Image (tube, rainbow, N blue to C red; front, side, top):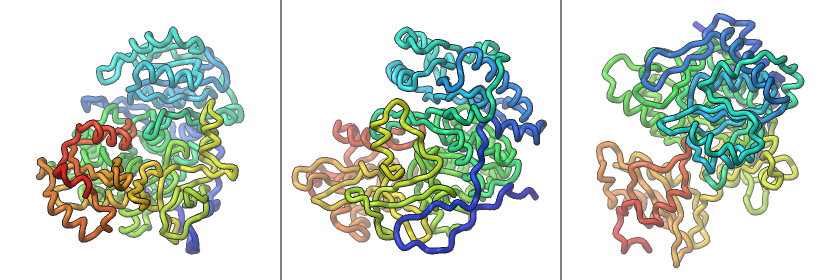
Length: 555
């Protein structure tokens, strides 16, 4: 039997007295860059499988060994350095393709900063991203899901004089070159990536991340999970996001395993890939798990068995965790993070209780301090009392590129990064997510955190999932509105009288939704996060179907 390359991180025994967990520095950080880490693994396991890419139609994957992956990346790195200098910004605009991780490794070996771009960006959004990042070079796909990306590039390029080089992925051979590559020390002095925030609360910001942050977050996440040596990691997540290009892509390097990239998420294709990869690790978001579980429930053959499932990026219902564990004979690990922290801050662990795994997002990774503060005073909250989640550690952003004012708003004078998320902490340092600070509902002076309320509503009969937002009200200022997604066996929606009755039994009166809406789906960012501002807009526009009588809206 194969064993973990590194044991799971131990639990600290000393109980906390307030909602502040100091950084655990027991494990040293690695000084690898992304490129030097690839070189080390390729030297140790040259013939081991490193990368496979599953096409849209579920056809035969394309595969590379570690030696082949390194050789290809070094060739492209030479081509990059023939065009741009050390520290230049090189943008990649493409859907999930095997060339994506190759270009990412090439950028790291070349000592340039990779700018990762959402393939769904429209012309104005692409222009904003390229201008904000000051990209000197753009590598792009010609099309993605029918979207003419090449045409869009030709449309925006004339307005971007700083963009000196444009190369389509179709001209792959033109990307190759033989220019000398920089030393490891030179590369370490250059930021690894610019990642754009998901835009759940406003315009996306350009997050500058270091090699130290992305390499070690991937490492400490996999060590925390106790991922076995040589494990296959299957990812349907978008590569332009940190969950794809940091955790899913770099994590396997630390276990010498295989990164299986799904070129497009199709739950049936994903299920088949998992069936042929027993003991794999799946990286996911809740929307992926929900669709995958639908396929697994309908399957009457030998089930897929996974060693572990990693999920996050959006609130995860306890029922979804339990269901996934039963269907795949696995353990689901829940995480919390954001782009500004290289994607992972807290993580549940193998030795956590069932309650902790389903109701918390775990304890902070090593080398990151975490605290919960009163948003108004900045004081550390007592244990169990919600407040803003703040973190401080090696993995936080270097800056919002080109925006020092936004950086100063995000990171205070003591170096604490303010996440804008609401949470609480218990005596072990485990964090519970309560929602976004900007999503806090204030009804008649009473603060209502959406997170716990959404978790409760999702347990009601006939409800598959639930979302809570505040909507304007003349009397209360704001009132609670619930948007429910119907269970598969109740497409017409739940029995509203039964739902309200359960709410009256379990909730304080001011928390009971005053309005109820039915939705088939929710607006999501490309990384799977719900756009609550858009939900509020849909309510205001009258798009969502009301379940309750209009006369009940002031109840």
